[in-house]
Length: 222
Image (cartoon, rainbow, N blue to C red):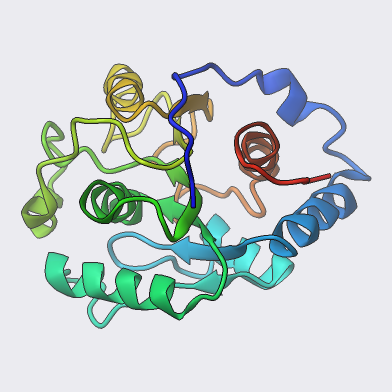
């Protein structure tokens, strides 16, 4: 379904930060509804799932998004996680846009590399865990998900990375975006962009994702 394979680009943070107070949430909510009229949206959490303070949980509740569920969040099995994503995609009657974080972003990238982009409209890959190079103490829990793909992904994708992520350095994020032919977007100094950071609805990320969808998907997203 998806025929895009673009070059990495830089995201202009001025667009994301402009006008976020007051009218930002109604505008963002309208854009989510417009996108949902054309594709299915699926949140793909990472290791340990996305807790109540995670931006994915806030998006799920505020914008009515669907979440991928796994049997085991603490000791993930690559085959089980891949099967769950396959089942969710096959159950959809429309192309699906994946909104993935950390190990969920790795799962998404590897699924696309293995299965192609026929069922996937695109993917927003936030802080993919760098299994191959990170020295994070929890890497042993996810080592079996490696190695990361090293070739272009068969769908429109964006990698969004933080400048102080303990799981993924900014240069490495740029490198992965280049390998995958993904747009490259910067989140600023936001740690691992997860439950440990008080991001709330993370308007910067929502705006960046919706801008990416407008630019790169064959859709009319207002």
